[in-house]
Image 1: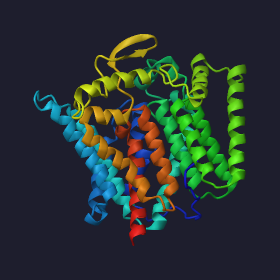
Image 2 (image 1 turned 120 degrees about the vertical axis):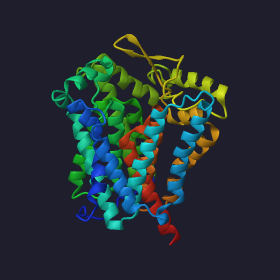
Image 3 (image 1 turned 60 degrees about the vertical axis):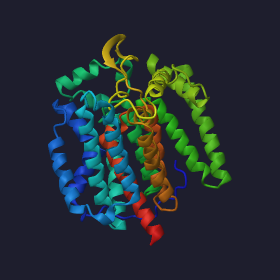
Length: 425
């Protein structure tokens, strides 16, 4: 599944000495608890005050100058430059959208708190954190599999929101997440941890993998399914074994054949949209990139490029590419709404809203953990998490605002920092 991965050969049991505030924040992000509370109680951001308190406590306990690595500073610079440069076009009209400032600053605080906590732990405790997070993502995958059951217990207004969603999205499993694409990426992160981290037995590892793969398929997320194929290919091709490469080739051929057979004979009585999504996965894998196969994302990106040309290299301001006025409007069940769609690409969002300097620092923030962790025993996690982040950011513009993604970024920064320390010590 991952380039350069070696399964970590340890059977460490999660430590009872881990900070309960850190574990609480890890559970909040890993299980997407704010969205869960909104689903079942109808209250958005109900847990935010508690999470803010945990974040402040954890930061005060563990933030130290010695933990300010170059890798972490690149992340901090990315957020700071994005907010500062993205606010500058608004200074003349004094119309800065403070909601985005608040949301991205919350991202900075949460990532920082988890980073400072993890980077201060010893090696067995870091492994324990990774194992705990693996099981949190596995629970999230189980939630995705039982999406239809969970919907029966949702709050009235949350259920109304689901039924007002596009019909094609309602036919895709989302579990504990706000939409199927988020649930799909959570399944990919889970697969990375399953492959790299130790398990009690091979059978248990296979069972875990089956749960994550089933959750991934039930979301019918085209980007995530293709991402899973890329990760699997990267893992097998770095095994330096002709047997592994041959096995992978046979598995891909059989998997593609099985997917075609299911599609052609409609074995599971899939809906029209589900069948179309499976067909698009096959077409995208074959190199067909169009407005249809990408669900309109190429149209949004083309419109976004025209907007970027007008403001390059400085940027248009915060929020301008989260909702591109004059572009396409969101369509619900065949009816056009008043909501403008965003560009659905984090890279172009940062370039378009805050300019070239912020964009270059952002690319360094993504690349440096991979460079620092290339010889680490955790390189499989670093490479895998970074690859999935890039895939996720290539098809969504709000990745840095997702609390689940915050934990992924914090873990990646922390273990990459620890790897860099090992190399220089």
